[in-house]
Image 1 (cartoon, one colour):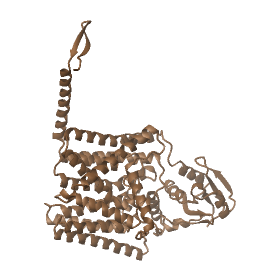
Image 2 (cartoon, helix red, strand yellow; image 1 turned 180 degrees about the horizontal axis):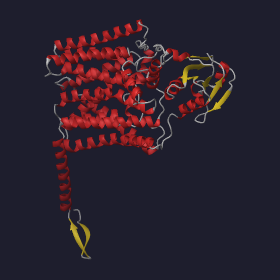
Image 3 (cartoon, one colour; image 1 turned 90 degrees about the vertical axis):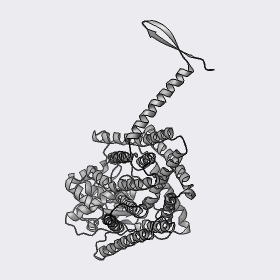
Image 4 (cartoon, one colour; image 1 turned 30 degrees about the horizontal axis):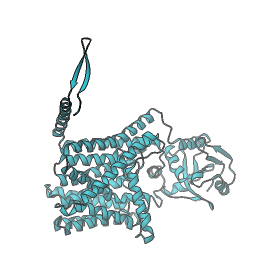
Length: 567
């Protein structure tokens, strides 16, 4: 028997002892639980699926904006995004339109670059705005696919909708600032979003008992066909993974009686016509010498390449579940990645739970998701794309379907247990895992605005300053120095990309308008970059002694100045 507790209270200056019995303590606990339940039920009655959807959209958008701004505050932009904008600005300045081999995946980005370039001067702000706009299709695609399949699984079940929004928020937007596989500053995320929107339209045509008119349905299919053609035109590697995955899913869904023969035939026509249209557009562009897309074609993987392919896929998954810890204090760096790693393990377990119930899946949705994951991953590995680290993006269907399978697992778990308290716990854990990196990214953004962070472009600005003070406007530099210098100087200082090796220095016309790779002037400079092979010894061997050597303060590299053309 638990002894009573003695509490001292003071009233009118005189101490008085009060006995608190176990029954009174239990009554207080029941009262607190009842109050919490009342608050939960009040919130539950207010947030229907529509309000949950819009609240999720708002949270994802805010989180993504600060994740992108946080990245811009901490890291220099020497990415494809800068190179592609430099190509466009070179053409606008009057250079002939001759993008180099390798200048793929920029067709869909040109409108964004044109609009932002006309409104905002070159710099970090302009690049950040471009990245935000190019990632809008990704956020939209993830949420559209999630809503379509979650509503099909759970109808108007608010628990499933909350689970879906928390999972999407945690894994796709509320991330520590980084350049991740599926969310970050990658200029190709617009393609991923377009692929997901295509998948959303095709899934709807296959599985949805549509209430739309025939005209509305036809317009959606035409839009899907056009988007698929543009995606293939922008990057022909989508033909390796996305198109076969869609075709196989359509056939399997039809064979399992998951859709009518008419719906399957319609979607097959959309996929075939869209893919063929993209190939025809690509061939026409190449025949006219535009060289819009020249991606390297992958080939079927050899037995020796299976392990690298699996390793690439596994590495990409781990990075997508973990945050970036570069340069952060241990306490701030490890907590969000650790929390997201725990969420990743839970996600995989819930996905296995949902997949284990395929035999009892009357709607066929679990089978659809599992087959989509297996087919997409198998094609990504078999075509050799997964062996290239960044090419895991072509398996985006597998990544999103895995998260949706986890959401179904959440629904199964809640349906078999004490739903209310476990739902509260699940939502609380998910929100905490997403809110912590969001707070870090907000702090990074505010510190950047207040000038409390070092300039991430300090090296680039120093190269520009050295050249302009000496009246130089044309130089040579390694790829990672070339485009950023040209872009951030507003093209007042232009740098041609070169490739350095023990055999000498040569032109490197990669991700550049071809004339830009062969610039020359009466006086030129060379930027050494020992980390990427352009050491002083190699520069000396290629061009001889310079007129002047200027030591950079931001690194151990130098700017060598010559009073003659170097090409």
